[in-house]
Image (cartoon, rainbow, N blue to C red; front, top):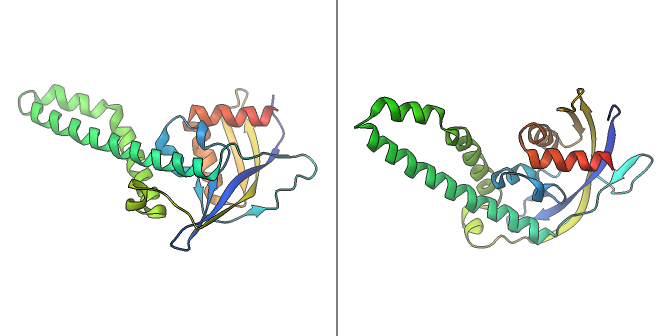
Length: 199
């Protein structure tokens, strides 16, 4: 049972884009996410960086993939989200046409369709990725001017008898929000984080 707070140093790539803007890209958990579109939540503003030196009971994680692999995963997530949204639009159009003949049954199905829940997540992912990298670069090839490995210190406490609740504290607010949401909603992230904490 995890009943105390654990401190970890999470590796990130500090990248500078051709636009001269800098971002932190997760270098450990991104490949564990269950839904590719959620990888956009692993991009953070360059705040709260730590030295990468582990003191006391701090657990230091090493990068699990290269910066080029991280960029590849983000581009893949963008193309995946765009394809899913296009398929969703085609499905809605088809159902609209069918609804002219069978309105009640079709609209009941649309109201309970799981795609409706996913649609805002896909749109959000596309918005974030295009805002950071630009649509043209995402379609063609993502490139950066430079990158370096850095770390963000994160304090994590799992709560509840079944450890379904998490309290995350970090000097990077974006990371705090992402970890909190992903722990509740993404089984892959949930499993990967528990594995790190239980080592």
